[in-house]
Amino acid sequence: MCQISKRYGKLKEAETVHHILPRDSFPELQWKSWNLISVTKEAHNALHVRQTSELSEEGKELVRRTCRKMGVPVPPEYIPPT
Image (cartoon, rainbow, N blue to C red; front, side):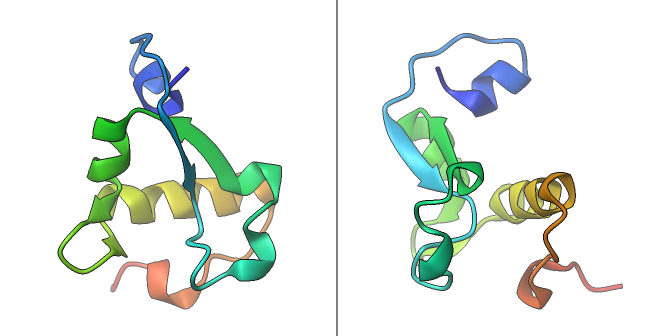
């Protein structure tokens, strides 16, 4: 089931797996279960800016929430400016 949809009370079948902390930047975390989330293609597209392959604001917020939950430091590039 899509974990993003589930968070909003909707049940949708997941079609892909998203690396919360991108595997290109964090290859050492690519197979950590806490760094993987099942999502629909639509939810996956919302987590990325497809023109640049960077994370969208929604994707960055998912990084921050996950890092806090797992007790892992949030990488500086995902900390919003103050």
